[in-house]
Amino acid sequence: MAQPLRVILFTANADAAPELRRAVTSLPNVRIVAELDEPSLIGQAVSQFHCELIVADIDPSAHVVLECLRQLRETSPHLPVFALSKHTEGDVVLKAMKAGVREYLVKPLNLEEYQQAVSALAEITPKSKQPGKLVSIIGSSGGVGCTTLATNLAVELAEMVGSAGRVALVDLDFRFGHVATLLDVHGQYTVADLCSTPEQLDPQVVDKALVRHESGLFVLRRPHSFAQAEMITAAHCANVLSTLQEMCAYVVVDGPTRHDPGGRSVLDSADYIFLMLQLLVTNVRNTDRILQELAVQGFNTNRISILVNRLGRESAHLEVPQVETILNRKVFATIADDWKAVSCSVNIGRPLKYEYDRAKVRQDIHNIAIRLHCPEKYEADKPKQVSLFGKLLNRVHKHPEPPKPDQPDPTTPMAV
Image 1 (cartoon, rainbow, N blue to C red):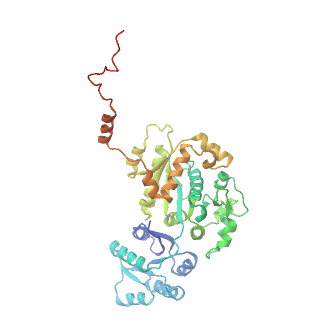
Image 2: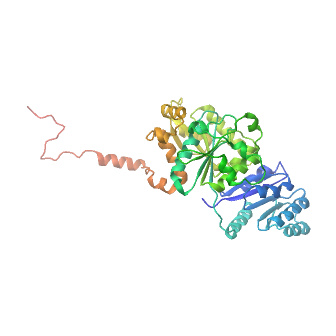
Image 3: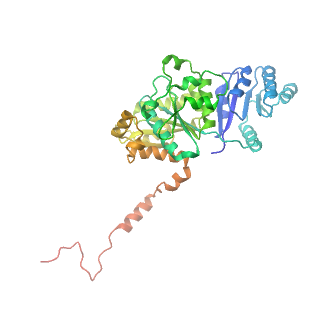
């Protein structure tokens, strides 16, 4: 994967926002870390979030937005800005150039022109430390196994990363999250303690809120109370995850559990998004609705990978190929059904890796971790598919040779 380009997106036009969001994220390496509808907040967002580009729709108040961008240039002179507008008048374009706008793109946005501008920017942008990968796990309904996958996947990644980096696991189910329970970890601080400031978080403050698991994994727990959960906004959540990405090789999040602006802000900045379902009609319908709703909001749903959990359980004749046909996309991976191993792991607070190392469910999660961390190794180790002709050829080669004329047929009974 190419180095991600983190973008702050501004538009005051709510009706045009989905289409703009879809266009901006049409490139696979673009991540929206913040989305604003008030120009005066651009400067604050830049101080709060790590980003390499600002994309601003300056209509309908072009002069007001450009003045905010001019002020931003005084504090962040090297931060590139792309401006979008329907105006082609010389005075507007000239003011945009004086405000420090690198690219002035005329609406409707030409995708090819936008992609060329991003590619040119990537070539001249100094290579910086690549942020950690953000992995988001969401469910088609409650109880499909998101928390089990998130905790065990994070443990597997922590083992693969080793001392070369860190892996963090964040519980985004602010009301009923059980990440800490599944790992049997306890601590004084939670994600709510990191959501009290609009500025960039100090890594030392974040470190204080993390709880270290015996596997080397660092855990950020859910809030203690519902009241604290209600106080967490989309900006707070994005700020915490952005800071963790600067500190860790991977940040695995259990959630988001709500499909609101806060939840979408997590998905916008995620590198990998897994949507889990079981082989139930209700799950498949929910999955289809989620994908459709995100598409309406302008989210690039091609970035979402489908996981089928509890494969092997009676599914009333619903099979994986049928799900792929209904959703019109391939399933990324399947996870075996093993109620005994999973329930025991949950109840005693021990990851599958420690208690059921050879269980099929653990191996499936381990393989997903390999696909994320070492995709080349996964492809090299993946069993090669044999064509129908190859299967027939192998069957011919395996057929026993006929007996030689001078030898008795071993299948013929001998005379007594």
